[in-house]
Image (tube, rainbow, N blue to C red; front, side):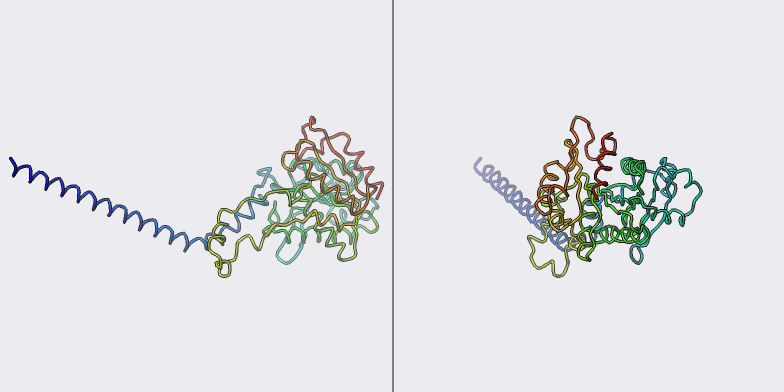
Length: 349
């Protein structure tokens, strides 16, 4: 009996030792796998960061979303703009911008069948020229953008609606510097052909940042825009940009940025609207819906107060639209009061 018990104890001890060995082996394999995975991440992260530049651009500008879908931007008549021509302007080498030019509604009959030369010649007819700088996502054919063009045309104004680089059928990729360059080119192009006519910027959402950037660029050249409308404007100090999923990499591994520059560094989005309105000398009109859920109204209110301090309450106006109207971020063009608001603003210029 004692001999059998001893053999049983030896067998149990051997099994325990084998289990412990297997456990250590499993832990060792798991540790090696983790170390290998970490090595792969550290090796590939810089290259992934470099490749993610386009993703970052899309998160900010959403220019790849070509809404409305399946439309021919060469045919503005498809959007009931039957006194509009499509054209392309070269803002810099390799960058072609798709632009719509809508003449005053009173000229719609005369505009039928006319070529680009005729449309360009009308810019000097004495009627104000509006350059509409739209927000992110989509193209110049978006419903609310067409709606603004129709409102302005009905008031007797010319309307130029460009798609920035990378948007719509315009070539290139969007950056803040690039968008500002595009807007500046459209302004110079229009000014060369409009004579003494007023030229006014209407920026919406992202376009408000582009508008104020461009206005400051012109001030630096000794040029003051005749007027600027900021619809749904944002203050970058209060707005959060999309968080980059690999930014931790640069926090944890200082020095890597020297060899692998941050992919968002080249396309850093600033749009210093708060600083811009301090420098601008143009009359300003802020338009904002109380129920705007994309850019809260207090952001625009802060910018208005700063602009008033920089100029005065006579040159800077703020018009709000009740939240019960349901205009949100894109619907102000529907308001029946809007034509009178715009007309009154233009008369003060």
